[in-house]
Every structure is written in structure tokens, then in C-alpha cells.
Length: 56
Image (tube, rainbow, N blue to C red; front, side, top):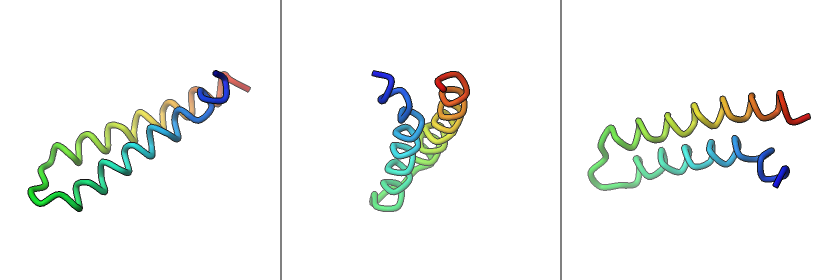
């Protein structure tokens, strides 16, 4: 479980990147993809920093 917690921030970043790639591929892209992607990436970065600060 600790191993999964170490990679939680990185996984959230990857989900954000996948959503941003979907924005490029979808026929009718909207700003919703951009907002969801940047939200996942911001939460992923913050989670990564917090987890590595307290889980050493």
C-alpha cells in the first residue's frame, strides 16, 4: 500500500496527460477536457510533493 501511495501523484499526472491527449484526438474538443486535464495535473503535483514530504 505504501508503494502505491508513493506513485499516486505520478499516476494522477499521467491521467491528466491522457485527458489532454484526448482533447487533441476528439472530433469536437471543448474546454472541459482542458480543465479536467489541468486539474488532474495540479492535484497530482501537489499530491506528489506532500506524499514525498511526509512518507520518507
